[in-house]
Length: 162
Image (cartoon, rainbow, N blue to C red; front, side, top):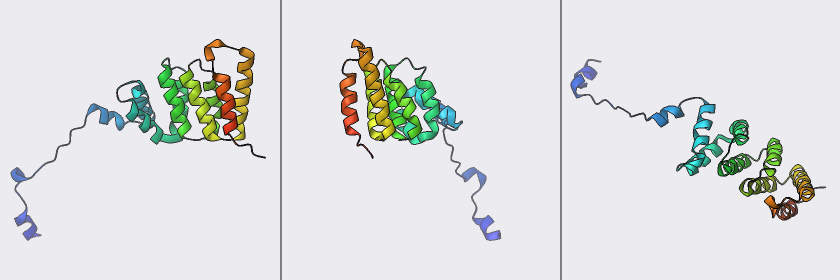
């Protein structure tokens, strides 16, 4: 013990490492919900790509919060990004959300929902697409031109199971 003390540096010569903690990194240490909100707000900014990937990394745990924000989000690009993020979870309970997103007036959003349902590839996903296509044919809305054709193509991409 005495030799260790003899070899120790005097306090004035010891190196102290000081780490800078930016306000952004402080926010990262908050609750999971705060983290999701932090990145969700950045989906429309210059850091949108990083935010997109961070939210994907959170996985299914962030789905409910993202779906709630989808319903309030005025920016169609952010709504489309949320659909894409939720689709990465490949979680069957999200089929209802994708069905809701199919009703969105923005082609960016309903295209993302169609892609998500095709990637799920389940009978339930096919049923949602068929019901949405049937409903749209009755509606015959010019605002959503091309929707029915895309839905028909999407349905063909999902293999039927028996």
